[in-house]
Length: 465
Image 1 (cartoon, rainbow, N blue to C red):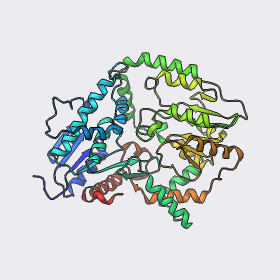
Image 2: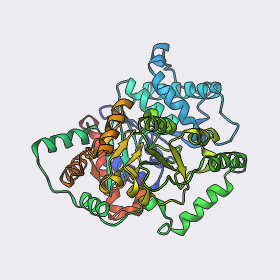
Image 3: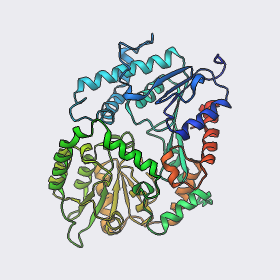
Image 4: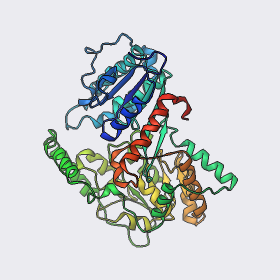
């Protein structure tokens, strides 16, 4: 029987063993009222007073199957229109077949069905706290995040960032790294240079030393069981064969758009493209989820004689791009889409600056002494040596500073201050099992850290700001 005096908490995600074990332990040691779980499997068993399966993209959450009395008003739905735009694009993650789900009508109907479901779950079951195990980057998760916030519920999510053994907790996608920037400004104003924790010191050392290739770009340390599972996933997925014509068409467009490296001595901005669809561009890229917009803005802001060098993400599958994406890039005169075989570290070293939406190459470039142009909501936005893109005229002015050699030089102490700010605004551990491959912590230690954080989130979610 739920305790009416304790918080009613709805959990979303928690689909991997690491997350599930931490969640079970956290609930076992917490005072919780009603417990809800939306996940691929019910890891809580009888402890979950409400469970909704996340399989099959929530296609079963229709108007016909909706059991809830609460239903959103027209005014409420109008207030969700900015969220609707994001969600309709997120349906790309669900519709993999080349012909399914492309019409606005299909996506809009699914959006409305899922909004009404979420609205009913929160209101009828009286959940006052929503905790997501990752940044909301799928349609149902984003709807849950947006609707719960509009209903003034406590909403928090966890996010692993590509810094060794580091994750954050936030209640806002737009402002999730704002505390880091605020803390950094304070450290810089006071000239304080606090020592780094061991995990941030290791991050500083490995980025400042020899070239460090991200663990996810290699499969050498991946267990054979995981390699076989990944192979089976892509070999036997039902829709794989249906994407062949897209792969061929888009691959041909890519080949047509590719150009050689610019002539020696030509100043260039290096822009490594993002893997899509992924959370790093949607929702973290905001309007720059369409990367050609960032490329277009950058190309128009370049000093005379400069070019943009683009490189496709090594893991990007041709079927996930549109051939018009490559065709458009190939028509921009001062843009060179170069071969994937080009070495990203060499491209960074030869560049005048590196541009990224939110990617790790931007973080690497800070340590390589290159200015970094940041389009999205990256964890390093606002770091020393970065240019936060908001206005094309300002971007052009900053690029001209780089051309004249007047852009502020790399300051190691300021980088250390920025990392100290990250240190103070983040937590140690792993909340995304993928990052265990890059961790110095025993898995059990990460589970213990994770459990302790979840207990705090359940007990006092309002303290996490």
